[in-house]
Image (cartoon, rainbow over all chains, first blue to last red; front, side):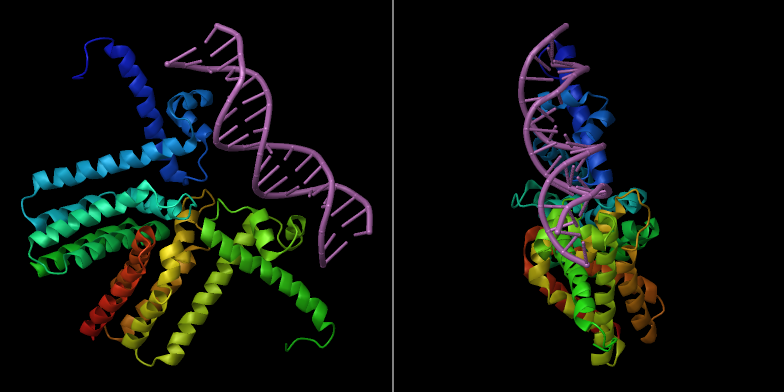
Length: 196
Length: 196
DNA sequence: GTCTATAGCCAGATAGAC
DNA sequence: GTCTATCTGGCTATAGAC
């Protein structure tokens, strides 16, 4: 929108197809798992012929990298929105868990998208991947909040709060029961209140 | 050993090959993930020719079911051993987490085998699978321990203790850091002591 | 830039000799 | 019961017309 005035439609369209491919890849890989998802699945979901995928991404792995980066961008945006909407660290921490718990219906069906990716990519020979950041970024953010509260073992608490989210997400999807996520959100809120 | 005296070697060998196949499938599927593991991988790990696999299991999915049942048997054996070794519910709960934390090195490399299976199989179209039991059995067991302690919301605490294990396992494998698992074990032990 | 057709490979599963 | 050879299909990736 703030780009060059020249050919906004053509460049816009080109970006559009690329974005559609990434969005479709996010959805389908999340729903089916990375290994089980074929490029034909993604192309079909994006409404793009299979062969054309390779104009935008040289390999399936390149597309996967773009998917991870998109997730990272979304996490960054969510944390920024929470900081803008809530002034104090305890409120921010509760807001983080609340925002995640709001997706309880989705989590019950498909699990946490970031946890799924980390577990699946952790089993690859590729070695450590960008996916680690999907967990590290929220942990670091939570650590800064606990530090701001003057809590000494802020890192441990940050690990614990994200682990409780990831573990509850796994049980929520295993049992297909969204209420687990919501119950844990209230429980974590009380825990944080008790710390302050 | 307590079977018929007739042909103990032949029947023993037959069972042996089947057991070797299942054991190899457990290891390889845990290390690589179910989808990425081929029957050729498993056959090679068991030292058995590919075509012979189909004498023991009609399909890859049949072999997967046997793998899940093996994990369930191991869980049952572990819980029984804990009950035999520890008399009181708090000790038993701490022993459960301790036993899981003892595998921190393995978890750091490959995650929790049961959580991995549930997350991967939860994404299948097959519908709810036996894998759910891998989580339900320990949750039910923990619930009975909390009930025996006279705690009113025993189910919630059981969910929480297993979720904390699963979440910590996911972070432990993501960060490749066994100390996370060990730290959480101590933390959970203090939490349980505070409940009694 | 876009799309069709297909190469090349590897998976699950089977046939049938031994 | 055991194993080799192979069928069939689906996947990633490419070639090349438009």
